[in-house]
Length: 328
Image (cartoon, rainbow, N blue to C red):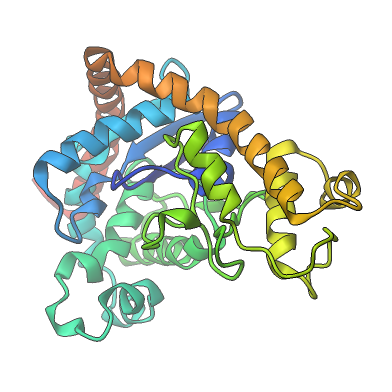
């Protein structure tokens, strides 16, 4: 396998869904492949961000990357805005992307809501920037969740269109890497929704910075049902099954094995097991994160070195793009 690129927006805390659905897999990938993991601060400003908060969030998410196990000696960790080629390539690709393709993107419709006329161009065109993120490094594979497959398909279409328009084979057509286990971590309060930092309820998610008391309180308030005894019946008891599935991912046991341990026990026992399983995973990450946030010089060094490494790859590739397009 060639080069892998992925990243998240540095807006607010990363949560358990980010870790189990993406970052845990990145940690494994870095041991076998060349990996670049960015902090997508250009994507973050598609909606207004407080500048001071954005700067702080870049450092926080960088610290969480490392605390989760991403090793800056093995992987490139950088914030997107430090590499100008992302924005430059997005313009070139945007000039080769039909509006009809962008009009099919469902996330713009979801995020812009009913007042679409007031949405910024960045929110509409950010799938082109996402394509530029990938193609700037000629990434061969991109870890994606189910909700991002549409954007990767667009990136593949854009790469193909550019290659055809300029009679070149320069851009690699990237392939998706879809994690089979833990790819969809659901809300603690609504089994039909993914765990998300945009959910207005803090009780819907476990942040990677939550302390043990907060985790136990959130687990206690997690939604179950009115039946006292715990059973694993995904169709009949989806709320209970949701919590058992989460314990399953956290402990790397099957849902059936978790349910067997809880046989004859009550919802309160299920929630205690959930809290214990959550703490076992989150506490080491939070401890390392707090250490890193107390050494901001080290964090800035990681980002500086990462931007330099990413910039060298991006610069070489964008120079070839300029030549292909006809820029002097």
